Image (cartoon, helix red, strand yellow):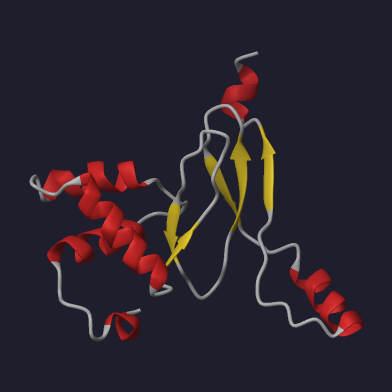
Length: 135
């Protein structure tokens, strides 16, 4: 990650955003990042968070993740292993799936078609146990 930041001016705001994202196990919104950053850097603005996130996405350090039916983009650090999620359509909770059920299929399709697959997304939608109990 640090290699991708070479040539970029050092920034305590950017470092704080990266620190916040490092400690998340699911993608979060810019507003959530802002609220967490504001605790330590009270003068930081939401527009600053948006600019930082946009730059980190451009550099390939952060992924723009799922946009649910609430129309809010969520972000996560690019990691060595990718993640998939189960997403609650009521409360928007995202639960990571520990394995990748598509790897075998991806390899088979690449072999059969000669297609160079560079990535994929896999998401399951439904109701989490908390929301399904509320019925």
